[in-house]
Length: 287
Image (tube, rainbow, N blue to C red):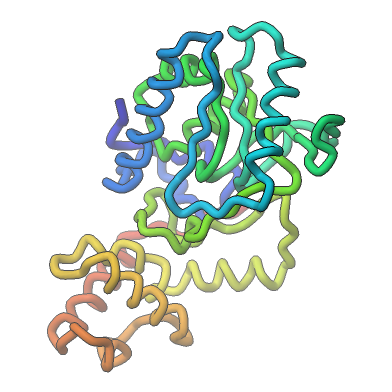
């Protein structure tokens, strides 16, 4: 149902921090996340094309006040304007990071004036979306999920196999977004994706800051610390936050002094591990 590797080539066109090297291994967290979404697609598709859509919500989501009522109106609008169930090949995103829009303008919704809809060509994040059975069936027909689930869906949106509609403004937010979450991410030289999101402006100075941080050997692989024996998710998160506050990143063992649970040997092991990973990692790809 979920592959063990994925091809980063397409994602590299939208995200400069993607490793442009072909196939890389998915992390266990990415595979588990993809599996959970695919299981929900199967449950949705099993109801038949005339069945109701399914609202998929990840556990760290914060909904905007009144979001439930607005989603009901948006679903009613979509089904009214797309009366043939088999043609409802759509996912309605309540939140997400849009890399590229398909259309230049948003569509006003008369029954829900607080929200507009706009179709995305490529979108990251799957924290909250509505999916119709026909779209779920279309995605299931393309199994295995051969990448992080958001990239898998975006590839199908890019090819017009499914439609990715996004609410403007967002109706939900993640409490722990991509770079702060508890899932290690593959295919990037940094756990921070370079935010070239089309629905939020980013200044050149902010872009340079992210690239500088990604290039620092002490920060760009910190999300892999959970792979070390004895380093759990909580300690790994503590180390990530600590490293981000170090000028030039984590490069010497003494910089870890004072962190509970880390003796001198473990401090040295962590720095040695990061240096080894850094020496084997490709350079940052150009936009």
